[in-house]
Length: 238
Image (cartoon, rainbow, N blue to C red; front, side, top):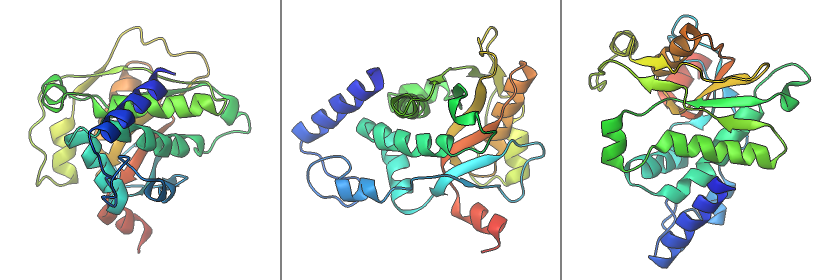
């Protein structure tokens, strides 16, 4: 309910201030009905190429391109907070479609967002992935799933600017930069899913998985809103 209320508040604010659709610039809502209807409704297996050794199966709703790219960046960098609601729906569809045993849809699921550094949260004025993860959990609960979000990961160590780094460089840059909180309170039988906005080389997801598993928390899968186009095409041969 809290996530839904926040989404309504943000949408109302955008409308009152004269907002426009982030996708097509139509005056009114931050995302018009047509653009929202065009968003992906399911996830797909999206291995990076090359893929970090031991990475849990990664799923994404689509390419980091077009409307998905616009929405991720508008929400993250330009503070279009109401976009957390449609992005959360996209992420919820990815999580809901994760493969598993027949009882999987009724199994509790724990979404663990990749953490943002304090300085970055301060600069942006919000924690984008935490907001989207909470929106996704709200959607899943609305569909009858036992879903929740836990901030089990915290930044540790220093990360250099990753612009221009290849997969090997990113992995080395991120090694040891996250840790798992003690006493995370994972429930017995709960499916743990690392969630992020974009999958690029998989290095960030792998580091999050490493930190959780070092803390005794097994990771079942990685779910993201989008995956970089170049990586997806390399993985599929298209």
